[in-house]
Image (cartoon, rainbow, N blue to C red):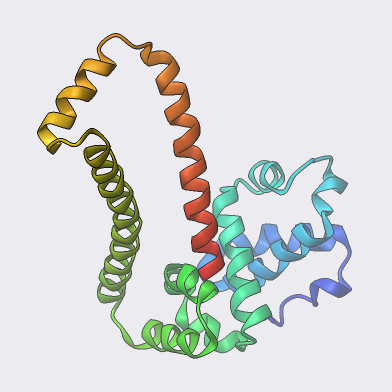
Length: 209
């Protein structure tokens, strides 16, 4: 912890609010301490003492900080120091930007893979690290696309067998069917089924994580 302030557990609400004001002036130098303070405010719901119903409105109004950034500061602290138990010095040396970039992968990885990500953040140049992460995200997106492609293939084959025709003939039959139907009703059904499909896909993804 930064020696300039006490531990948040030993501070009252006003002291914590004042500390955030002082530290946010040099965010990159103080991101660890800010993350701990924001984490404390969120966990204790201290924003209610200032008359706010939620953390988002509180940080944006009180500190003129984007709530997304405040949330990242909090989650970076909670993951790397709270969960992974890294020391302050190591976390500060890695820097907020690098830690934020690898956080989505570290959070869902096994312990040995987490260590690999920390090593990557320590040794890889920023641009190389960004490209590496970009490629991994692309592969994840392609994987989701593959699931849709499988569904499409299964549907076409099922319909082709049912009507005993080629794909071209199937498209013709479908065109005949759809030319006079109520498309608004069909759109509603499709939207509902697509939402269900994507929710199931996300659920499977989270289970694997």
